[in-house]
Each structure stands twice: as structure tokens, then as C-alpha cells.
Amino acid sequence: MIAKAASNDSIEAYNEPLNRYLFEDAGTESRLLIVRALARDPNNGKPSFAIGYTTTAGSSLDVQSRFLEALGTTPFKTN
Image 1 (tube, rainbow, N blue to C red):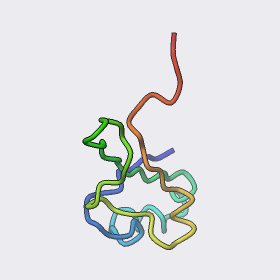
Image 2 (image 1 turned 180 degrees about the horizontal axis):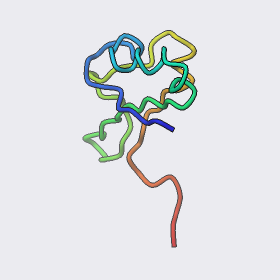
Image 3 (image 1 turned 120 degrees about the vertical axis):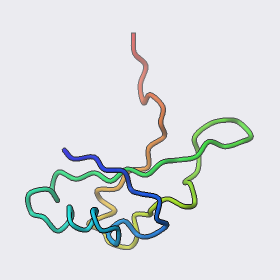
Image 4 (image 1 turned 90 degrees about the horizontal axis):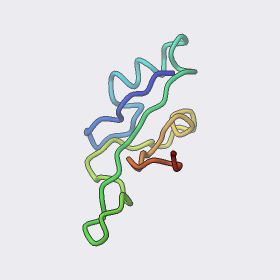
């Protein structure tokens, strides 16, 4: 798996040069995950909305299937 930050370019993920290279390379495309940050809600402190300047998944279904918005919290309880 290759996890890559979406970037802070306010563009579609496929249009960011390194993302495009990774998506077009047959050796990396099937292992690629693009991760976008979420901002904390100033009213309750919970991560809840996408930061406006980050890159978006865009209209490509291939990119959308490999795009994740990360909450930045633990998804499960640990002992």
C-alpha cells in the first residue's frame, strides 16, 4: 500500500503532478490511497469538515475509489 497526502492545492487529486504519476503507473495505481485531512469544528472540536484548500477526489471514479478523508481519531477502542 502507498498512502499519499492529497496536497493543499485546491484541485482535483488527479491533476496534482505526483498523484497523476502514481495513478498512471501500473506498478503503483492498484496500491495507492490518497488521504485528505479534515478540519476540527470550532464549536465542538470534533473533526467534521474538509479543509477548503485541500485537494479533492474530483470527478474520476478511479480516483474516488482510492480517496480517503481521514478523521484523525482512533477508529476503534484499544485495551
